[in-house]
Length: 563
Image (cartoon, rainbow, N blue to C red; front, side):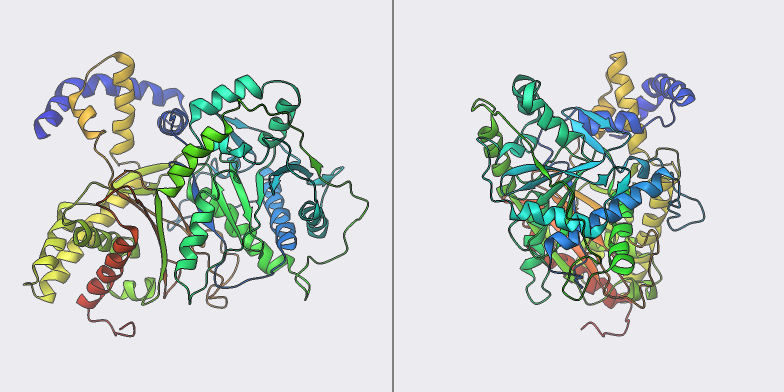
């Protein structure tokens, strides 16, 4: 690899770099448009599991058990957020430093749809598309120029829940087309949904502000039942494969017990963007809108409002809905998801170890992976680059020589705690520096990606680029941000916590790991793998993560309140 890199640096790279410099002179961001097109939109595999990710609700408190009421407050808050965006009243996210993040991403929040391989951005949308018991509805958010109040929205959703009409032929599993292969969906769209009532109904969904799924099942996190969090995550990640519209910017998922969640399409925005929206919405629901003693929205609804309308379809049997469903079901059934709350400690104790919480967790993941697989692997951690206009992400390659030296020393069992602490601090310092470089535009992976695209355009063969970009990410990780907008004091409301969210494994024989350092005393983990791989097991890996975190904390001889 060193010889290939040297040859690339001396011979091929200078020519390719000139084209990137030229692009940087006219493009607002020399990476983001290519990243969106070639990483997300050109893919032909299903969006479900492979690309879309999920976000959980608050898990330690519950504002209401009334499904329609919760939707009334939440959707009203979402449209309030969009209004604030349009009026430029949302403050830029400051991250952990003094520099504001680019606000280009949040402005894409509503409404967007992925039309086979193109993102359709709409300047405005005044309705949502709703799915319930195999039927699709169109629900207006406005009466004239007035945004419907929460109590009006509750009434409208209750009307849908009470509607006894059956699905039309082919309607129940229609959304499976968005869960299966992209080529099959594009062909079916052209053949069966490009004219008549099918075209009108499809446009009603794709031009909606977002998609709402009213589920008949109930999911939530019960701390006494660890499996409940994993079941909740699975329901959000893929549902039953036909009750989510995976092409929309996001599907707002409502369970029968009032619990919510999101399934988000990745091309339009990364997790911190939707996290910003979600924090605002959950905070507004809890601290500004409120509920009656019986769990309903405050105020009296307007009964004169026209009810939501059913979308009308004429779906032929040749529309490949069933085959798309079978593809999606096989993919969903293969996903093993293990979610858990790590209770022994959070960022409070980690800071006493004089290291960043993210570095601590990432090094623990390296130790856990070696304990799980007996080897190291190429590791991906997403870092935000919103310091730059239209910036999205950069890769932090967390498996470093320093982290592997620490892991090997831990596994040998013959080193003193002082030596292990020293090795850990070196690994943590290296990780923090790499993360800082990635955030400030000095990462390498997006640059290599763009050089590769230029080489393909020019027809230039590069063994180095082909080799370095073909290596699989068998451990793909992401930290989920929290408290981006500071709507409440976490010390006064310690249980006002979401559990973060997760995504499917990137490699067939690898793990996907997301984590939220949710407070001073807890961390949530979401681990995915595939049942079809004999080398991985999400729950086994989760147990190794628990042990690795405790083993590292023990090196610093902190008070053992967690033992």
